[in-house]
Length: 264
Image (cartoon, rainbow, N blue to C red):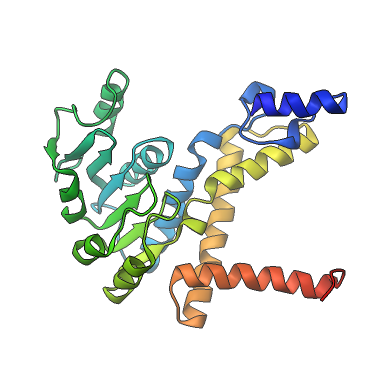
């Protein structure tokens, strides 16, 4: 991203930091950007868990993908006294019904390529991940992971889509029928693009915030956003996914109508 900024700036004759986001900190990047998506997953999950009366203390959490998104969400849930009982990455799936020690896992990952060799947990088959007893599932890896078959046997009460498109539409319908609450990717993993927006704002003003300030601003926006989606869901009697699309379309159409500058 620094190269893209530099290439564009060379054609302008001066540095234009705001042309792209995700830059290194010393080139106009934002603090908190790397952890922002995972933080947004936690914040939206925390808010919805409270609404469906699912206490985070003691809640069993399973995480697919342990990169920037899955790991940060896991750490924040662990700080809220949830138990991270299963983690799956490209190397395999580990399981501990008493909760995986994330600090030990963090040290393990500094010298290993993935979670599979972590000795303080049980290595289980990848497909068994979807049948683990859990309260919260965080798919934070690849798209198309929650299939019809997996949706039918999933034990989670709450699914937080940290990845883009992890749930097939048919599987989404099954989860709704089973009473599983799904916080859709369009809102759940929006923390990253929100802090990218913060980066652009900071670049435009050449004034940069502390990580604490960024997290406070992010949390405030994410809480408001998920509350708006929840309200629309209740008002329209629809899923959170449909509510998010309704809310987005309503805002765009209202702005289009009131500005009146585009051809009909």
